Image 1 (tube, rainbow, N blue to C red):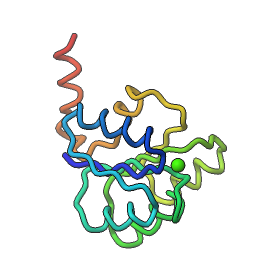
Image 2: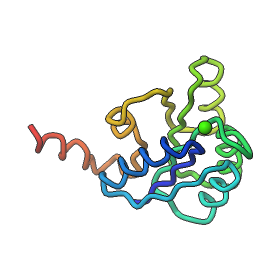
Image 3: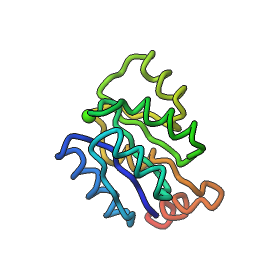
Length: 130
Ligand code: CA
């Protein structure tokens, strides 16, 4: 499983990288919208975590361009903004889910888009832990 984290804040990027590595993902980090867009187009990721406020293009723009290019990798958008209009904009741009900063890592991991929902691996895993 491969995840792309598009986040310009180094501490947040490092936190996300560590969390996904611990979940068994291979992680790439891009720190601008353009870099994220290029990575996402070229590499076949299973999930993209996309910050909204980025240098070189907003997460909204990146997501819109990817969908226009036929890249349908599940996108979880991160933002410090919590306005309803921004959420609608995010979903309109093709994001699959939306998380407002500050968020808890367990919530992010629980809400990360899963490329293989029919297999329900997450559900079986949770049942094992009880
Ligand atoms: Ca940012």
